[in-house]
Length: 91
Image 1: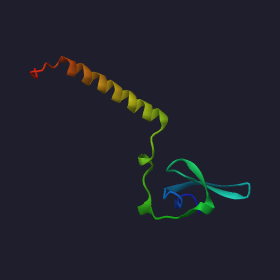
Image 2: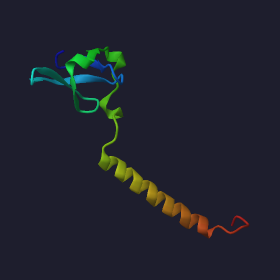
Image 3: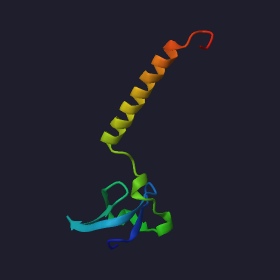
Image 4: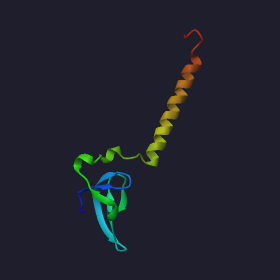
């Protein structure tokens, strides 16, 4: 596999674009952009561009997840304040 090729990890079906290829300890390792992980080349097979999902769809980082949780918390707090002002008659 070469940089720019598409590859699929057999165990999970993850498809990514090859960013780097390196040999270490007698094994060839391939970096896929999807999760920014190196995979043993023997566990990969060629994939087509149609099978490739853009990196923008990859899992969120911890920081992004924490920011989203904080936004949700603030939204919930605002909703609770609004609900507290509503009387049983709906006004």
